[in-house]
Length: 372
Length: 140
Image 1 (spheres, rainbow over the protein chains, first blue to last red):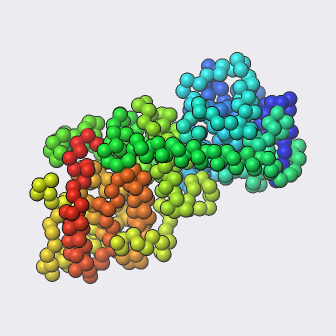
Image 2: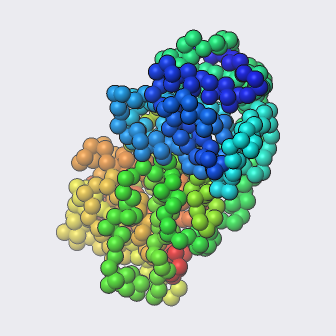
Image 3: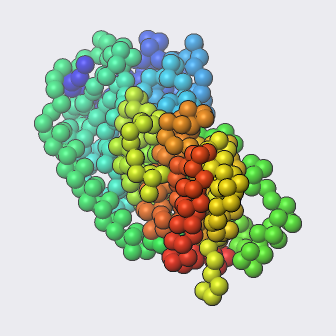
């Protein structure tokens, strides 16, 4: 089921909140996870259960401090018979949830995936929009981005993102290529999604041509931007010398791992006893080259993380935002993960049915590997 | 580098390649002593972290030996090792690092000759190629 949803009073965000209110009041959902402003105006995420509290919800908030899939992994590892929770997520968050479902870290039964278009976000750090100060801020952003406008203040990863609309969803809401003061695009892909659209006034029709066109040009613009950024990266970083230099500021804080939505281990291998060397072992290792950089094995951490996670990386770039020494991880991971996923003809978060590259195999593939 | 001798860390699967190495030894086949063997239960059990750790700590090469496809003692471990190797090579290539310092080869328990030949070939190759960039690099 798909079509046009009329927007009330030129306020797309309120229109979505009105839907939320209806779903909560009618018991179609027990709670909704949605972007929200804190009272200090900080971009955050809220699990809203009382429709009256929807005044705090800001589903179209264009700032991102966390990939909400991390939150979903924390709260929805197991299904609960009493909870039907709607997740109102950005496409990259949704794709990470899909990866987590395949990694058996998120139980889908209690969840309804509601995806929204996203044309880009600002870093949450430093972003403030105190409630009431600019009540129309989110809508203005949506209006501006409905036709796609390049914005160099967006997060690095967003500037390269070629997935502005959800891929796997129960229900999707779109504003790109629409006139968001008048109408939004809605699409229910599953029964769970159709339940939410029951008795909602949706004018059934196919995806408008204009929307397809804008999405297409956005995709092309982002592709070009990505290619340019990767070209710049290749100049700054290729080969062992430059790689070491690129990561040389690393403090070994592991923030990039902690905020990564798809880095799913409850205890990181790097925090395990395998990496606890006593002083005698450190001296023994140091003797090999005469000196060891401390803290040790920072580059090993990053290289290993790339090997472990690149097949599932959704290129959300939240790792870069969390890095206290601003290592350019977003572009690097974009490049490395794109190349890695291409090997397996895989796109992270594209489908629930595609098996994870490292959990499957075919007998008659990569026949040269191991032979020469 | 004067007197450069490549240092190779080898991960040999218990059921095939390690037995192949044993056969090479008991058959008194000669091969260079540059490879330090580590016996593992399966090539599929070798996480990339061990390969990377060896390389960053200065090994010039890493050798991985597993059962031939279809012959894995655990049915599919070597197929998974193969996929992991594809991913590993892709990451290394993206970063501009050598992909020819890590060799994965299928060597069965009956292939003592192949084992000795492969280690000879790899040692010769790395001798010609020269030492790894990480060998002297202390600040990785």
